[in-house]
Length: 235
Ligand SMILES: CCCCCCCC(=O)SCCNC(=O)CCNC(=O)[C@H](O)C(C)(C)COP(=O)(O)OP(=O)(O)OC[C@H]1O[C@@H](n2cnc3c(N)ncnc32)[C@H](O)[C@@H]1OP(=O)(O)O
Image (tube, rainbow, N blue to C red; front, side):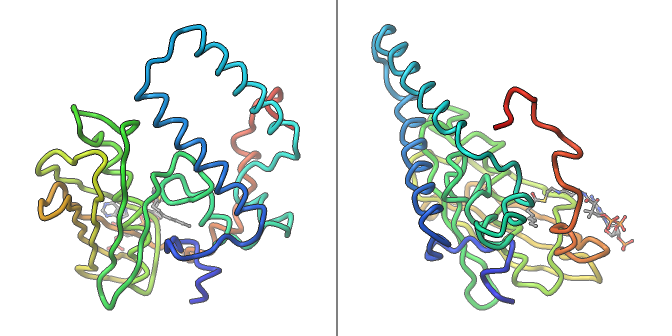
């Protein structure tokens, strides 16, 4: 499979498709930093109002540029790369250009997928620990990528997560996944998350290939035909 067309691609070494995404990666990194500072600092209230005003101005500046809603629109314009490249940038768990993404990185070696992830204080659930919902989301993304190990990638049918012990924040988390079996359109997988030598969580997942194949997702209805953004938010 051509890596650049692969919708699951998220190898950390993959460079940005063009200067636009390179610049957006930089903005996303700054927003990530801002989020981390926001949840770990206590400036005086008037300073925070000043900062909020600056950020509102910045957001308005951004919003005044041409708007593109959803990956299908990004690729239809023909200027921003393929579906795989755009997904690589905007994925909410792995995308370098999406500040929501920690990000999760992944690679395949033989019949095992490996990955890692680093969650700062914005991801805190139990004290000093990653929120369980984020642990599940990280697995969903990572296992979705790890399906490259099989022949018929699909979407998550189920994801069963076992939380063995708390997953620490500000720690390099190592991920590992294997296919346990495959049956027609179904791929069964197991995954593990480690903090150093400690197994903090594990999962079993089923991925089911859509009847028309995974690439049929690229040809589906435009998202805004289903979920229209509010008129006030359109550029
Ligand atoms: C393009 C990039 C994708 C990246 C993926 C990253 C991970 C994600 O976040 S995916 C998003 C979360 N997942 C979803 O939104 C999926 C929503 N669900 C669906 O679209 C569908 O239910 C889908 C595609 C999973 C299965 O639909 P469909 O093909 O119609 O299923 P169906 O024909 O009924 O079932 C096929 C087989 O799977 C089994 N199966 C389906 N769902 C489940 C389930 N939840 N539990 C157990 N078995 C299941 C069925 O029993 C059936 O087995 P068999 O062939 O042995 O009878």
